[in-house]
Image (cartoon, rainbow, N blue to C red):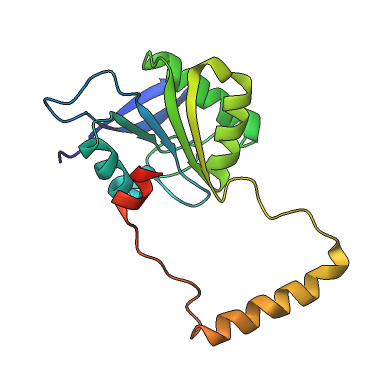
Length: 175
């Protein structure tokens, strides 16, 4: 495994920090690059364990700090943090890096951005993986108190920690 290179690209008037894990030497260069999009209040380095596993499997892995997060620029006066802005940033990044067909992975907010990009540029996304990417399921507001009560009861039964699972790269890659 190698560490990523970190660089800034100015896209759509904002500097975006991009982490880039090159594929390991001797690996089939035909594998798709993988673009990882973090969730709200997160940053690109949070993908490091996943990126390393994908790198070992032979992929180039790219993870930007999305606008307003980490070491990327903030939208100034008149700038926005709407989903179309994030999608346009991804489009500009994909073009700037001259990425052909890619695999796209998004977590939480990044999953929504990934979904919108994949729907807008379907010819560029060969694989799409979403981790909590589309928000909670639609349900009646009247059911919210009972659902919240069940969640609190489940949390209490689990010692207040919630369901913790460790990341297993082999299981993730086999899916």
